[in-house]
Image (spheres, rainbow, N blue to C red):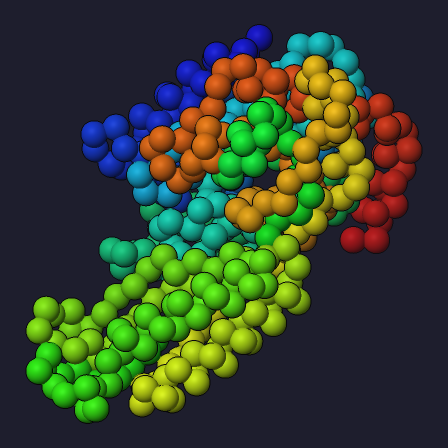
Length: 426
């Protein structure tokens, strides 16, 4: 039976499938490294007793039947892709915990009143094509046709990358599930924040996931010699700097997260006033209306700053995702799982996730719940990402206990009848 030590060894094994040298990790969607990771996940799923397949979006999937074949499933999952120079647990740990839980259920001989499925999503980070959650959105049935024209930094379109990977863009819809197929979705994930570590707690329950909007903002002025007098300057970088500081002020005042992570200036020469600056904005909040009000204020403030400086500002939204709130009954299941394995009488901590997760996409399809695992210092998206074997062991036990708690709430006959009723109305 797979142990916490085995799971950490598998994280190390997956980390070797990387496009970067010197032990750094990068594994992007529809790459040879993605194919290798899927092959390993399929091998571990098969060993766990699951029937396995790669779906039409390149997600690696497995299924353990319940009391009868064909019952709707509880879906467990996370992602196998990474950011550049990544850690080895973001997403990956959740996939491996899901496989191990399914293995335990299969090994117990207990027939659950629902099927168990595991999804190892191929793209959550959006590293290659700039649009996140491609794998889980395909499964959720929210794929957008205009994504086929997205290109990576080498000019390869998503359509071409699908074909090179051996997938057929024309049948992407076959990856989609329906609400009748699932009873819910559970995801285990490292916290990607310091709350658990700071409080000395190994595990937590996620309440909701921040809704995110991303923008590409361009400020245009006039390039000129660095000797140009102040009164005649139209410095795009000076204006962008003021706008970025306003973003920080507005986001902090609204208790939101606002991140400018990319900035490019033209002409980018030491003795030339920048005439054009392009920068990104990632704006996140627990409640969409508050986030949207903050963006409206940012947009208004940027226009005022640029008007005063004789500059021009334009913005384009490049990504949007609504906040996703975990369902009460799945939150309760995760909390019950934690209480059963942690020697602590206090309620499990409840955390709001500022980081995005595959659960956000799956929330369009079915109820979601999430278990957070302590990550040392809250460090993530970095090679220093770290978890302990003891915490992983607790997470495995708690994740299994959450699944079994849900199984106690269902009856296979009632679930089957409900499934048939929903299927009849599809």
